[in-house]
Length: 159
Image 1: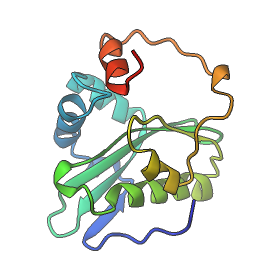
Image 2: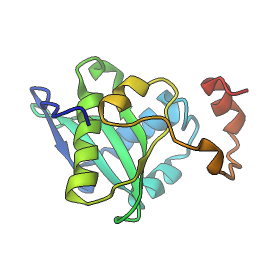
Image 3: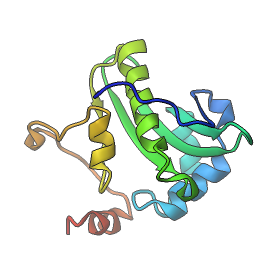
């Protein structure tokens, strides 16, 4: 990380899964995101139930305004995914703050030293939290049978 990121005034971060607003998260992911467009609500619920998550909340109302999901073994590896900031709250530094806090939590508090994520257009946000392009991407392989794969690749400019 480049250094500490101050918490934006009026917002809090929580790792409490009970606070997650799955209605909002489902809307964000299945309707507003390019990578999870059309993802079924039950799939979103199962993905969050099987992962860890960080939520950002407006302090005055308690309303959730951002989220990041983490798939991890809890020891050696974590994949950060489903990062979303509500459109109304973009431009306030919440995404950068969320990522800086999440990286600090995973690496320092949890001792997980290998983090991975993918993005179409937020490279600068993630770079400020310490992320860089994968070294040796040719080593990585995948199986991807999602019915939305072609649409996702098109959104990424990969087809």
